[in-house]
Length: 309
Length: 309
Image (spheres, rainbow over the protein chains, first blue to last red):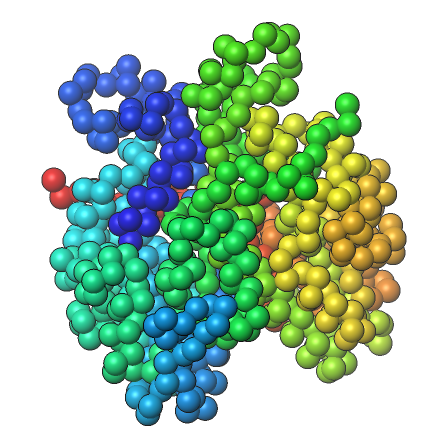
């Protein structure tokens, strides 16, 4: 998670850049200069300055505030629960975890072998919204601070909220006899705080290395395939859910993929049918490896347009 | 649409503000100052200056570039098509257009009365992505210019693209015998350009006031209920699809609603079951009336958090 968040806020800062990259970044230079002149504390650290944005970023307003985003979350969670209920009734032969050394273009999937069924979820912006930390960063005009985020992982319990529809969806999934497992890139030294945060948001009770897996629990860093393998030793995973493709399979985050190449890989015929049927994605337009690309990636040259006069 | 876009870009500018509101707004002051000093054209109009952002905004990168957004679009379009196929086979007694003078909390719906079935879609960021215009605005460092947008409505054909999954979804909907109708807030004086843009993107052929309705076709301005009533004179509308709640029913955009009140209204028991079952929302985190709210709306006080040291 930390690395993802860093990437995200770097992207955010690139967009709302108000100072050279190595200088303190604030969201609004208008308010920033006003509060800087009002502040007597010249010795305050860059990340602590009280520069405030006039409003949250539009993507934050959309994600955390809009009925539209909330409804999309509810629709998706309902779809996930319906899928899991149907699948659990089927006694499937294999799950949806990509087998090691197979690829999205030529996939094979781990067999169920009679193991109990599980559904595996990312935590941040999948089960919970990190509104406490995000609000703090925005109120302070800080893009991102990894030290503060580490503190958030430890102490955020009660200040993160369940995503709309998640609690109802999880209740149906558990009622179908399927174990809910969390696979997050929060640091494993912060397992206790993370479990407390999930519990306080009503997501459930999780035990480290049993139903809660974090960065450091397998040797592949922010990659989640190693942890998915560990989970698959004891469970047949019938659903993978996240806001980033790394929550599904690590090959999607291969850094050599172009923006369009990454998108094309998700459309490989052998796996295209899994989206919405075992592999599920929830919207998060505010951070993560989903957010990348220069002008020609995002607005392809064949769409270039200019006014007629 | 125009009003929606203006609202959106105002929100965007508020977030990435780099100059007082009445001054030309550019995305990146770093690049802006560099290009300003390199530019000999001091007489260029504010909106035409060549200030360039270093990258598209994160929410643009997510929406137009990410595999994640593309997959969510495909998932949703597949859900819409499946719903329409099932509903069309049922010969329903009533549609999903809220009857005049009824409310989301106490709704009644227009009866089908044996009329042919239709599905009604918003155009912008629902059927098509306006990448040509958005890319132009971003490359130029312009937030939004209504004169340029008007030109885009007239001349954008070929520079907007179908949203991922839309073409496959529309093919299934039409194969089920359901008429596809567009209800957009583009200006009705630009009906021809809009129809050309939809056709060039592969969405289909549309006729003004028959299968294409625009702002000005009914007396309620950017409200779409009047046009939904006109459409319902000839069709039983079994699906409403958009990126904004105004694409579903105008009472959701009542300006007296708070951010949380608007969200709560969508959860009224009488209509909560319609989302994903007749009423469908697609993600658009870059503009529109979905994007509003101050700090306490977006990061509610009960989630306030600060680092422990």
